[in-house]
Image (tube, rainbow, N blue to C red; front, side):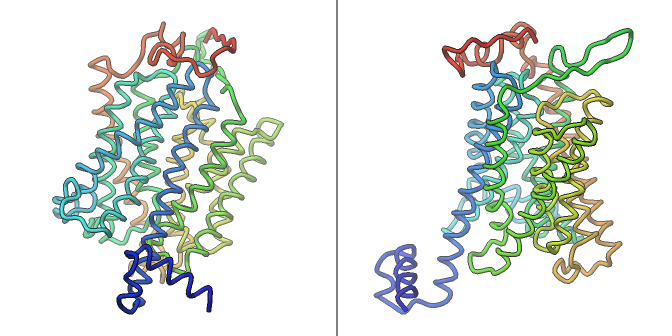
Length: 437
């Protein structure tokens, strides 16, 4: 009885102080308060993922670029939040124009407290999509160019494809496409932008060298595995806000289901990535094991509500294997320089997770009216459509930045490190840090 009393008093504070004593508190009031608390809390967890991305990227790159990485992760949220407030929210959640784009609510005009709540939950997702690009283009991108493409991704590119899937009346949503928390909506968008960026900007100096007419891939080790590990743990923690928060209700008992499938997929992803690297390289590799956990998280994000725990283990395990194979293929065969494996973790495993909805998902929960084969087909359609949109728009965007010399730093600046050349700062003042790469 005391616990219930304290709960009602707490809810009364959230709802406006003395309202509990002025009139009877209804179940709708309770539900609204729980949803408000839950979504703002979940948004806060997802916001913390910015720190996770910053630590992963900093740890897996060189010390001379650490401040630049931190500045990019700070600014892609700051710039992205303003862009998503002014334009992005409207394009994603405004009244649908033919199922392709939102048409109103710019500057979230006419919003009430529930819209503000929903905007807060969604802006952190937009920031996640933008920050994925940072890692793949690390150590050679101009800071000015990064600010510009973060603005465009958050304002236009991410919201438009997001409207197709999560917007009211979006054409992919109407076709039955299911992406619970963003394997395609968020992670693949960031990954395909990262892929185009890495291709257009080119590799870091010394990454690929010709020896006897053959291209040889040289490893450029990151400077701090502890920072990378800390980042992965922060991301894993924040992912509970990402996935469980996407229930959109603080009173939904499926929060428990989602957290279980999220945990199992991440765990199996880490384990299977570890064993894959152990077999491939002869020793269990820490960076691949860490990325395996992230791969499992990305993989389960689309289907975390509709896939059962055993299916989550399978999805995570496959993602753990895929991320190792993909990183090696992109690096050693395609010769695309992605310092943190962002394309593999968020793109390849995003595809897998999206298709896994059709393969393992509970069709009754998905409630699209499609058969198993039909669901797989529409999931594949969504993957292709989003890839085409993001690849085309970001290829143009990065092409313009490259043509205007706003994309890549000079060889001298890259050699000195972006901390000094772009920011006039040192991340480890007093420590002797030298690199001839």
